[in-house]
Length: 253
Ligand code: 13P
Image 1 (cartoon, rainbow, N blue to C red):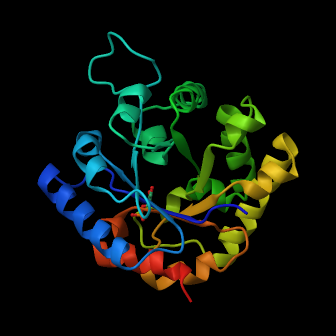
Image 2 (cartoon, rainbow, N blue to C red):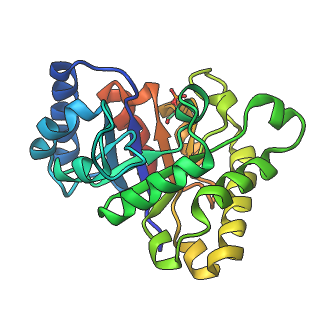
Image 3 (cartoon, rainbow, N blue to C red):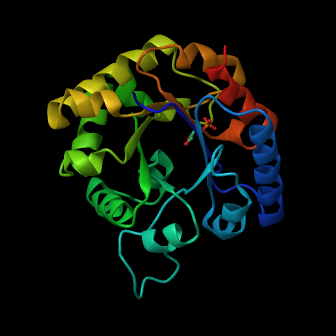
């Protein structure tokens, strides 16, 4: 059966000492009280090499928040998938709405990033989601379907096995406005159907689909109770160990 995954996206938060302290606290808590799901922390690039050797791999994995769309060379300021992998990280978030909106990442660019990430042995948390106007116009299915097809549907089924989907409605990110559990379930089921059309029912059933957008300890249980919601991609609430642990514990009775 597919994995349940709770992943933290630290975004552009935490100095190195702050990030190390948070990772240490989480690692201790999860080692003492084992999670019922896979847990990933996705940190800024500069934290990766320091945090990787601190983590108990059995309870917490590490990821980056982005990687370059080029393999290597004269691309000042960029960080390649191979470099991310060499730190000990196992995951990378790609296609986050903030990268699409503020840094002009198109479906084509993301397609290149996904290929390079997979070629370097990273698992990809690929984000999709509509903005408020698209939701209000009832276009959310159309939007996520084209985001999936535009960057992922040229992969083979074997490659796609290393993709986790994060459905993150942009109107719910950092706004305190969560999608209802029913809204999440409806679109997660749709995403799974789209994956089934492209890669077959077995691949679709094995794909982890996370919800992201103002997920908190208080609403995680209701969201995760839905059959097609396989965990969460957590922003703000991933910056405090107690909140993040509260969401992870939503998978416990
Ligand atoms: P918030 O949990 O802060 O709404 O952010 C969600 C998100 O964008 C995770 O990638």
